[in-house]
Image (cartoon, rainbow, N blue to C red; front, side, top):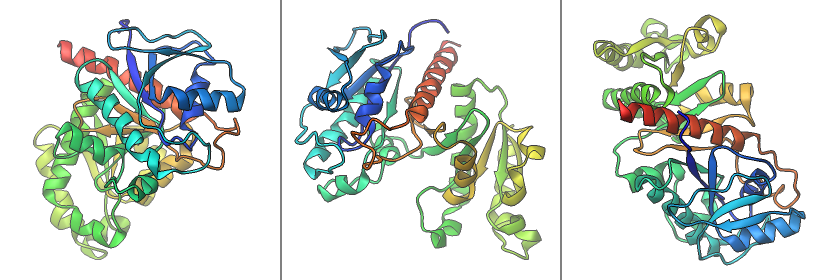
Length: 333
């Protein structure tokens, strides 16, 4: 577990707080090694705006990332058209997507042990004529995997999702046995591979109030969720549920669990974000690479003010390093 880890850090939307969060890392000694994947001109401009003394070291594959305070390794990406803080520019969008490609390809090639992403602005990327629904979907396509799973985590709680960004009226139809099987297997496997849990204990939320109340408040639990969970239990996966979501997030259940599997976005994430917003991490499971991200957006109103809080980025880096180290152990077995 002592070998060095190198993580790629994409700086995200140039007009947002991502570039200065990256620069804040340079104010302290760091482990693991961080390589910021961004335009060097962008980082120089933001550092000058904030009055930050940072030495940016051009990085090449095979080199060690600098870890000393006051220095930052940078994998330069061309294509930036504007460095203005707080002002979105669709012309920057191809550059933003290219930073993701460079970081992800570096992970696939073994140059990086994982990648951490600062926030992007999906709207301006689409305004530039680039079809982009988010980091998760982009990396899924780039890595060529059929299914990925979104999981947010704090030190105390992990919440994974069966469905993600769907209108509420479409959620029930999307919860099929196939999807539930794929998501649960990925969650169980990646908790083993990336978190060192030999037999993960997973709590599963029901879809309906009171988990359907025996069919009186909806039949999805009886007809889809419960039979599918029984099938997965026969594979040795430790599952408890489906449980009513309004009582699942209590110490009675959480004290004996490693993760929660929620049926939809706003069932599980409001609880997690209330419990740990600003120190949570977004994790993409099901990829052949390690990917973590901050739990917040671009915060255009804070960009260039020096007031951005780097707490979530520090958590994303810490978890990314831990995942990379556990993956090494799993691969070595």
